[in-house]
Length: 147
Image 1 (cartoon, rainbow, N blue to C red):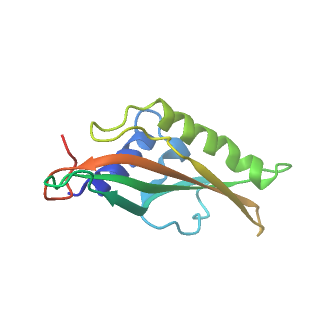
Image 2 (cartoon, rainbow, N blue to C red; image 1 turned 180 degrees about the vertical axis):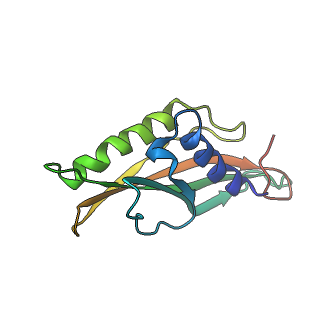
């Protein structure tokens, strides 16, 4: 398995460990509409990796890989959609910030960016997208994590 999938899976595992966030509705891959039976959902996907081989004669590569954590939350009566998703965003960020990164990575919350959106339907749904840039290194000659 590549270091990229290792990182994505590690984020999913962090969000589902112990007391799972979003009631355990955490999935990898592209986000899709929140099922009607779910109040919250989290979708984790890889977005982009930019690598750089720093030394001639070494095939180890240092990467800046973007992982996107998309969250959705239904607003309750009297609550706006951005407030609904804000608590989930805060919980996701706090859990990642407190977690130790894999041995080949520098940290989970380097260069974060957040975007928000609102879907007004029968019930308002707020969404937030947390984009994280993970600095990590792959092994010599392949895409597995360096050890």
